[in-house]
Image (tube, rainbow, N blue to C red; front, side, top):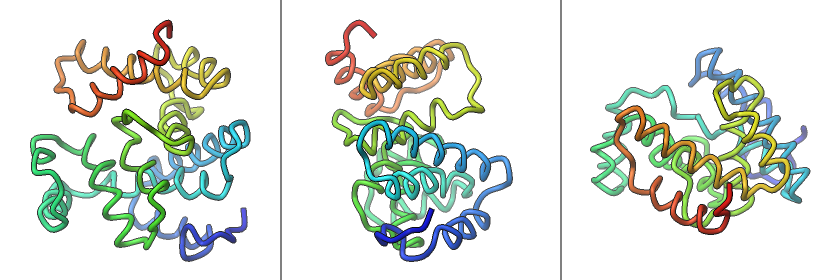
Length: 198
């Protein structure tokens, strides 16, 4: 894909090179699969493909940073100090968006919110945010009970997939005795009301 809209100030090859510097090969291959899935979902849902490419590629940009980088960013950028009580699974989205903005010079809020919300979801999400949220969940290498159902629902209607993932993730966290980031609960409450039979 040739980038022409300047969502990222460079070429796709240059963006891939930046990702290579940040991610091990396994994580790099994951972001390529998420990009491909995001482009497919964008085609099906009338979302600009280049935007889906950039958002799909960058959603895990900060995933492999050490904790101290996230903690420093929370303080430096005046983010909600409540974030300090959570770890990488929350930080690489919520805090990672700030690192993408400053290090990759991506300023489009839709793309940044796609990263910000790709692990927790949000009460309201644009089609692009929903696409990255689902692409990360259902990319072809994902293999967990329920992933085929998630793919079916997402193909039928993007919002159905979002509601299913919000419900599935909350159940996983509770069943495994893990803490629930408040926004994940907000996401579940909002989307299960829109799609109560998912």
